[in-house]
Image 1 (spheres, rainbow, N blue to C red):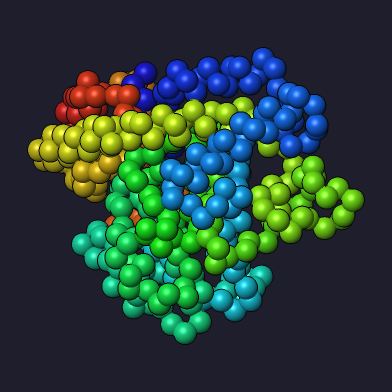
Image 2: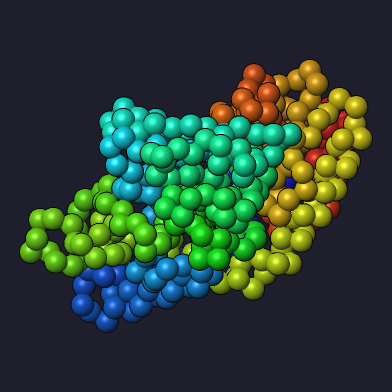
Length: 371
């Protein structure tokens, strides 16, 4: 199979990641829960992964790197653990349901109000976001890269326009590992990460990084291995937000995957930019197709056919050509509404830096045949 669904989950892992996972499965303990030698050794590797993510994303402290099972959990902590009764939020229409659904729940439970910034010529403009800010705005939520089109909003320009007191939350699921995200430099207060995409980790690895301006409350309660005599969660981070056993195999894979991204992101980002540029050029030369992605470093290329649904094309690519893509709405309904593709969705082909023009050519050849 030609796997072009890397935006859902990276299909190929570096050898270092595979080795780290296999090693952790052969002999594993519970980091942070016991005082014996193996548990302490694993706890040191967990701390090393925190330190690496802190450095890679220009964070605000190693203790403010929280491990989660995925980006969705990180976003839930960022929203449920920070927003208060009656707060106002501005979110972009590009957001994933992992932002939109928590906000919808907060509308009901805390009377949070939400305004959605729309696109202009398929771009999210900082001025559009700013126009929705009011005196009650507590937070602005903007993805670092759209999971539908790969569009990367200008977060630095947005931060410079926003009033200083407003928190900036960035969903880094599709951006992390593909291009630099520097929290302090960009003025990001909360950054949610998915380990299993551009950071090359296995599923079950995610993280939330946050600034000194926020103190997220726990949304999950349980054992931490610290202050066990108290029935309340610890007040200090990361323990306050990490109830229950951490997935050491996932964290070990995230350490190696993030280290790989640190050394290869520039070259890999250029490769993905060239791939999406070539896919855009070749597909738009076919009269029945429309491209909805510009060339981008996240490797995402979304397109539509004039008469066929995205699910139909995705099914044919799978059944007839053994090519894996994703059709539909990609858990981002407002993005499709803004693009005018809500009825039939889009076909999303998402490339890996471990792929090249062979995979792109196979996708284009299949579309020519299917026409």
